[in-house]
Amino acid sequence: MKQIRNFCIIAHVDHGKSTLADRLIQACDAVTQREFRDQMLDAMDIERERGITIKSNSITLSYHAPDGQDYLLNLIDTPGHVDFSHEVRRSLMACDGALIVVDASQGVEAQTVANLYLAMETNLELLAVINKIDLPAADVDRVREEIDEDLGLDPFDAVPVSAKTGEGIEDVLSGIVEHLPPPEGDPDAPLKGLVFDAHFDPYRGVILQCRIMEGTLKTRDTIHFMHADRGYTVEEIGYNQLKLTPKQQLSAGEVGYIVAGVKSVRDIEIGDTITLADRPAETPIPGYQEAKQVVFSSIYPMNSDEYKDLTKALDKLAINDAALTYEKDSSAALGFGFRCGFLGLLHLDVVQERLRREFDIGLVISAPSVRYTVALKDETTIDVDNPSYWPDPATIDSVAEPFIKASILTPEDYVGPVMELCREHRSEGQTMNYLSAGRVELVSEMPLGEVLFDFYGKLKTVTRGYGSFDYVPVDYRPSDVVKVDILVNKEPVDTLSYLVHRDKARARALHYCDQLAEAIPRHQFKIPIQGAIGGTIIARSTIQPYRKDVTAKLYGGDVTRKNKLLKKQKKGKAKMKQFGQVNIPQKAFVSVLRADRD
Image (cartoon, rainbow, N blue to C red):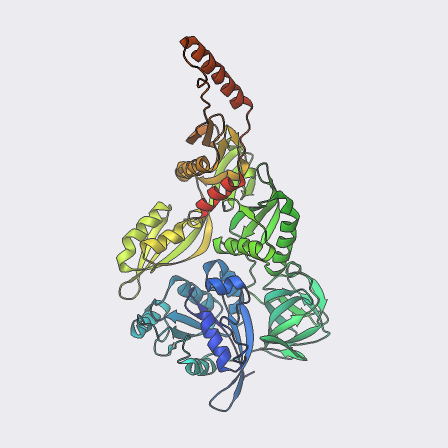
């Protein structure tokens, strides 16, 4: 066990985690030059194109140290985006140490600090790595100062590297061996293994990624999942070395894969503890948490004939993505679809992009919403994330919405605009911490629903890209939330209804009305488009009708003939308005909801 190091790479998004992992893989000769490609541990096309890690991945590397010893390095590459922080938490539980990567030009950012706290919760040993020292804007001395001030780590232990050019990679490997501790555990104790990840293989079922904490696991052993309360027989175990390498057994301190005939990721729970059925452990590994969905949205197929295809596609996606939840939903305007729960807007974006690419399905996605807690006058409480299920306002006693604690790191020059932006998004109680020279941390509590739509984009705009943002859920607080209905020709369109704070209701209703007025074609009669809270109209746009010139055929004569024709036309218009149907094209929904998300 002294020759094993279990560690992960944590950092803010786009600080070079995957590139550093690539260089470590190459330095340990785990891949030939011919087989190598950038972002080796990122399996999805979307991850490569966007340069982000969505799903954590692990690999076992063999390292021959300068002191002549051979070490087994178990590396876990983690996502950097705040939406996937539960993946980072699970990965940290499987490790004994972590490399915390800081960009030499941008310095310590919000997600870096958040990941540091996660690592401290699990008592990990940390080694700071200063990446991108080859950039012209790199300032290693300033970043060392920030590592000392913001992270509280020894700045002189920090290893300067360029993951792009490969400079300093040997120092990182030496640092891993010297600074990060070996695992602890008794190979003869009852088995305790942490399932920190899983993915689905169409031929072999679910392949579990597992860290053995105590005991020894062998093939043909019968394992028991302590939270899910299920039992399986182990078919194969081994190491992840880009290809799966079978072994006879996995002992305490080792990280590897398990094939046990699990049919779906939903059958088990990621973060669960496995033990032997005939010699079980007394208690599971502490720290288990379920992934919590915070954003909810309805997904409909663009063409109603594709509903069955969408059902199959979501089933296949859910096999791999345990954090995605969905249930059947229907809309009068768009037909049958699904109400889905996501970890955040990026997660929503990734899921809909995968549905479009991998399954070639055109989608209409409703406006994202959060989950509100509604206390009714009959003293019952319900959770509502879908405007369709919003109770009658007369029966509502109070509404509570989820609040988050947001941490924003920004250069000193942009503190004013950032504070103003937070106030616009109904923040409560702003506090400032001056970190290193010229850098400020702004901590503020604000509603999660306010952050969903345009907050992140606006923050990047007001701070010229230098601001970074991280949040943790806090609690539910009373709020004046209302349901806004969008009426087209005085008929409510259920798909466009949304839940919002009363102060923001009119602005969004005007936006919806204007977008629909542009997207819906003109008819022979006037079409009012209105936003309403209950029976009160708060916004309106009007689509003017086509008007046929019924007097064109007249060539003189008495004016009464002209008036008679106009009167007849007016009567026909009124009748048409009464019985006419407004056909809302699919592109109208797409334009409104897409503009709303942007």
